Image (cartoon, rainbow, N blue to C red; front, side):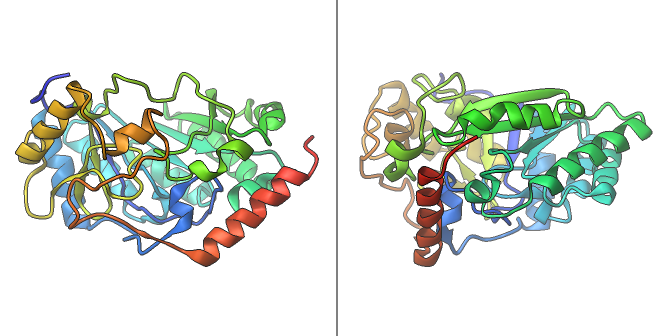
Length: 322
């Protein structure tokens, strides 16, 4: 926890901030006006600048579905070429068919994590897409492709559990364990307070993946949005923690710019009123959040999406679980 720490080893780029799913616990599912895919030239420049700064690991996903960006494989191959040691991304797996699996493996990606957050019985209610069998087929196909090519690329499945789906963990584990390297179980959280109105219905509580003070995110991870902004936090779905515009400045210069140094100072002193950190750490999950820079902040809530999500939550709450 330094005001001006060394450039991180890990860089995470949101190469696409939209999604073909609408998961009930994801703030992105309620919002409209998101960019879509990151500018190609900005992404490649940031990858290169970060490597020169000492970065060794690259994540090609954050708040959206990375497979919607057809340049993912190009970014991975470029990163490998210039010396990144580990490249990974998270996905819902819907677009991970056999052809895409082959391209991803050939590009040099080191691991892929597929998020399956419900079994057959509740998959649609959680994700907004009825695709459980398709995802299982894609997982099997990816595994067969990596074995065929003798690839060392790892395949993981994560399950984000709610009070209404915790009994389905074993179903998903059983359906996938023959094809994957690891099954990861996590509890849903309120994503920095952005979906806190559903706490009583969905959330089980904190686990080892939940954030607590001190949080390392401001000090050892670079987060870059699809708009090309340097963001202080991976939970910032509403652009309240934007530090700098990388469309006009380098990521190296932005990492220890005045705005970021001041935020880290406040964090170290626990002077966090008005920041997303207060909600994310659970100190006050209903606190009003003020953007660090109002020029970049905020998405509007889509009323139709919110109504649809609320209806799915009600159905999930009232139906029996296996």
